[in-house]
Length: 270
Ligand SMILES: [Mg+2]
Image 1: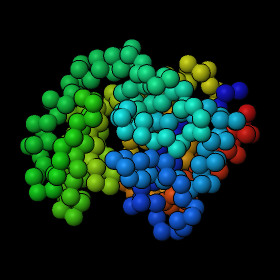
Image 2: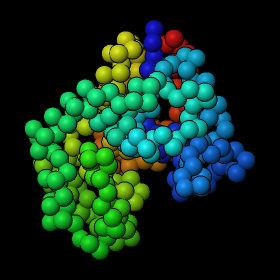
Image 3: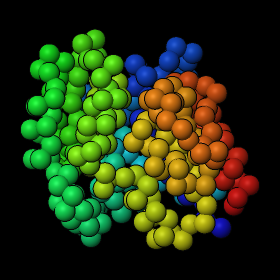
C-alpha cells in the first residue's frame, strides 16, 4: 500500500526566525534554506531526521506556494536525492525530477484564461480597493498569482472579510500570511495537483499537513490531516472536517508534532 505524505513547507515543516516561536533552543536548530548568503529557514534536528526517515514508510510530496526558484533553495528537507515530485506555485506547477510537467500547467492556464482569473484582470481591482499606505510591494509569481507585501501595522484587519468576499466573487481566493497577502485563482489548488500525483503513484492513502487557508483544500481532500494551530486557518475559524487534527503545539514544535504523527500513521498503514 502506497501512503502519500503531501505537506506544505513554510510554517508547517520549515520555519523562519520570526515564525518558529520561543520554546526552541539554538542547538536544536538546523538550517534548511539559505538566501543571498544568509540562513532563512530552519527545522529542528529532530524534525529533519524524522522527515528524512518518512520515505521508509511513505512517499513525501512537498506542496508549496513557493515558485520553482524559491522551492529549489530549500535543500534541507531531503537527505540525498530531491523528492521525485513537488507541487509548487500552489498547484499551478508540478515538478517531476526537477522539471515542470508541461501538460499539467497548460491545463491550469486554460482554466485561468476561461475564468478570467489572470493577473492582468486582477491588478486594476487591487488598485481600486487597496490603499498605497499599506501596500509596500506588488509581486507576481511566475505569471500565475499575485501577492502583496503589506505593512501589517496599517493593514485594516477589520476589512479582511469584506475583501475576501469581494475577490471571491471575481474568482480569487485570498490568504494573509505574515506580511504577504496572496491572491490565488480558484483554478489553482494544492488539492488538484495532489490528486494528480496520487493517481500517478496509485497511492491508496493520503496524509496531509498545512497551516494556511491555501492548505485547506489539500487537507480536506486527504484521508488524514494535520493543521498547525499557529496558522491563519485556525485563526480564521473556517470549519474543518473531522479527519483534520489541529496540533497541540505552536511554531517549530508543531512541525515536530506533525512529523511524529505522520510517522506513526504511515507505519500503521504501510
Ligand atoms: Mg504554510
